[in-house]
Length: 450
Image 1 (cartoon, rainbow, N blue to C red):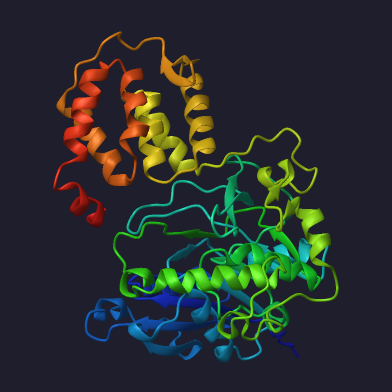
Image 2: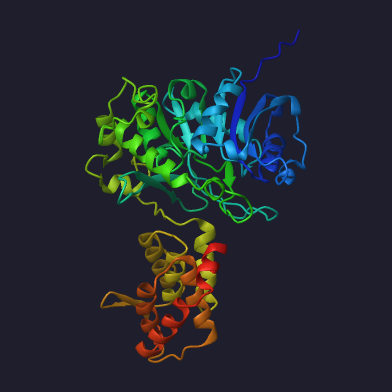
């Protein structure tokens, strides 16, 4: 007589705000699972019943295994609130995975993740990372191992933000490796983690990941990063509505959330009932202290200090000779192809800064790739330029178009002027073009569209 062994089940937690990709995320999760019968999906759907009909054009596979909470988009209170709502849809599945509503999966992802959890040297392991990106309708060409590191403290609010650190493609690791920061958009663990350390529904979105990382650590949960790709993320926001676009009070919500984070960390205690509501429920455990987490992670929340360990994202000694990067593989390839096509390191640097990439990552990536392909980059009084640039360059349509793109993306005239001078543009010509483009009546509207 053959005995059937029940497979451990996985509950996928998805908050979805007016996102047409969600239907395809659910479809891909079932289609790529080695055992789709053990996969269960919970969705906190926030949408406009009239405008968002296109978000529901694809039927869910295994509909009996999909559970949904429906909310009108105008009643949504943000991402953390939606994640917390998903607790009501959990039915005792042994494992839980928290993701965003715009993801794609590797084949047999379910079996891979359960195997990885078993390889971790902790009974309370959490697998997490910011995955590499995909674009709907296009093949996924870049996949690599991704860790997490500290980025910076917000200047005004003092909240810590984290970043990705990408390991070289093709790096073969035998098992997941220890980290210290958790990504809200992808976490996989035993479901007890979500009952012991619930998502704080009173937070909004920004800044919650570092606090959650410290809270999990205090309850005895250990953070690991997957040793191979299992999931990818759609990072573009161009074809979906965002909560802050529909809710004009989002900045006020975020400011209160920042105050709540400082309160829970014991940095700036508040007496505002709204800010401290249920603070004990979303505080720290008694297995390990907040101080022990700070020592392990190499950070000091109160003094806003980060050690090299925190900034590099290397918390184990497994990678003494591995060079990591703050830039995704697809971004590195774009830098290389742009340089080979004739773009200068200066123009790429300014363009990427205008797009919001961190300055240190941009400078390092552009300089490294330029050197690899034989473009000599030298420093002169703090300004980067190449040996091959001409002593004088006339302002042309292509250059002015690049200036306009940078201004639309958020660069200032003060940032762009030294770049233009380094490119060989006369200071008078640079001033004239910048003045004309900055004062254009179309610039504010273009920024809104961007």
